[in-house]
Image (cartoon, rainbow, N blue to C red; front, side, top):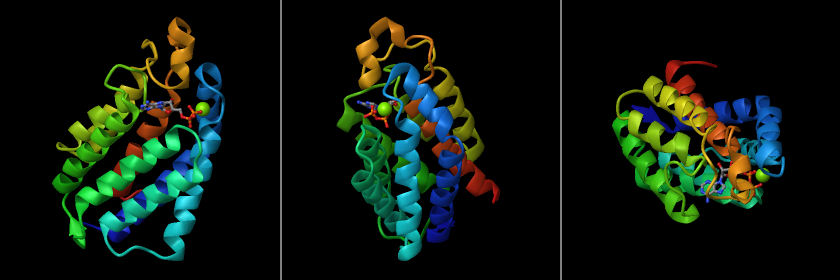
Length: 201
Ligand code: ADP
Ligand code: MG
């Protein structure tokens, strides 16, 4: 079973990975956006870690809803409300159980990803974070490792896509040939989850 501590460690691991990869995320956003994705994510997750440390929530659902709320209030760019909605809706779907199964999480993450699609109006193939999140949520029904592989493959698959949502869509054809920054950070979030499940520090 996955308890509140597991979810807290997931968010801490995500904060570490996002901070380590922030320059790469910003470089990707410089190519097809406005070069702020790394700093948005780093600032947002740092605030999440601080908020969780100040008052550690007692259930898995509460950890994710608190993290999502913090992202929404800290990050101004498109990614703040979208990631915030992902975590809040996933947390809400987990309810107030003190511990949840991997299947519960797979189901809840599916609901969170659907909420992101609804909020942003994007679907698979639009070259957004959804191209990593949709296959990851699906593969989480199999295993954490499968979810990580699906997210990485999904992020890579955005390279030949033409952006249809967000800032990158303004570039039209010129968005082709670059990996989407949000799909890349989404793969980091799922990697952090698999690392936490696998016992990585
Ligand atoms: P901004 O575009 O406001 O500068 P960020 O640079 O932080 O925000 O985030 C950009 C990322 O947000 C994109 O790479 C994309 O993955 C994601 N994104 C943008 N618009 C949407 C949308 N409508 N639906 C899903 N994801 C989106
Ligand atoms: Mg940007």
